[in-house]
Length: 325
Image 1 (spheres, rainbow, N blue to C red):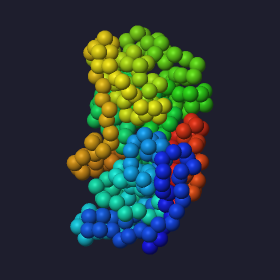
Image 2: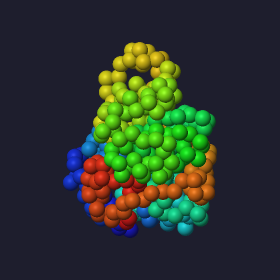
Image 3: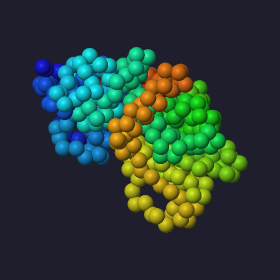
Image 4: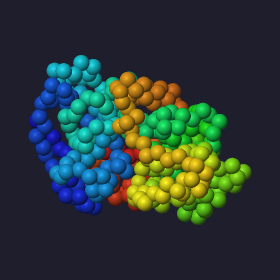
């Protein structure tokens, strides 16, 4: 069959995103074919578009989506044609009407979870799950710092922290984003365009600082984030929205209090499959109970992917964004 998809033939700006029609093959024995109903938009997509994260061209784009299985390989036993599914990791290629992929990261959707919510939550929601429940398992007594609290990951984090009883301090770039983060459960916000976030963290914690910082911004916040940590605190660097962190001096970790640093990814927190299924179940339970509600503030047609990237990189978006095939 033929289906529309976004292809990157050369790395660069948003203009390299090409809407093309491709031949989509039948799935192999260990594959499934999914007709997407919604596709998630994430900063990691920009990293692959620009070549910050290397991939051989031409290649597809996107990791996160939700839809219906329309064909199943002979060796795949836990999925069948007609299943409603979501996925948040795997080979590039979610920016497509129909795609063939290995089923390792595909999970069935409960009836209570719609396609748009699943597409907005699979990568971002599972990211918060591993950050809060695996990388540093929050107990409910902590005060934490979370950068970009009004973004897609950030708003889920605000809600999850509130549900756990955790005081989340969120950095934002405007009063409007501060209000959005507070509405979603942030205990306090810091407008980094006007305030020194290190000094504000010290003020908000009475000088105690925080045991863990979750930083998806990268280069611009790296040094300041280390200064927000208590002795033996954990720096969780999980993204590079402002550019990659480079030239890390391990001696700084000693000087600032025997700090720990990790650079986690979803892929290594979602294996074996039983862990993925348990993580997804916890996420879906949080969504079905209303403790986490997705803020899908932008919807774009698949052919408008370039504009979606411009808006995301320009900090013009709030909450989550989805592409609609």
